[in-house]
Image (tube, rainbow, N blue to C red; front, side, top):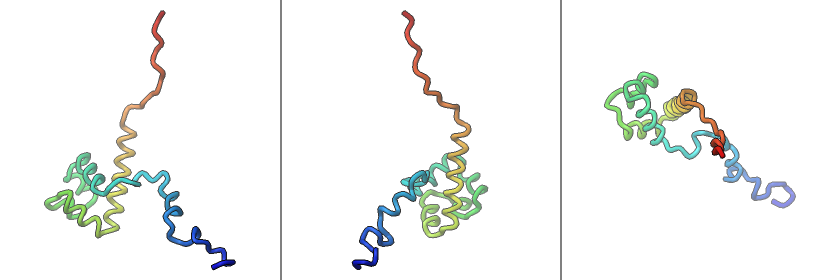
Length: 108
């Protein structure tokens, strides 16, 4: 290994090398259950099934059945994550602006 330039820190699959990829990722640390629950609360199951036409949202929907399906089906999970990001942008866009003005000074 000496002289090849492959020190243990440069081996593929090291955890520290993967950490910078998560910077700015709004899905980092958000559990799939929280995503499905937030979408169901925001849109309701009927509209969620219209936006993403998958059976776990249209036929007897529940968080548990949705999680089971989405964990096994990458293409459906990508659609759900995309809709979640869209929902976050939509909520942010429709919320009133927050101004961080200092409080007024008391009159003397």
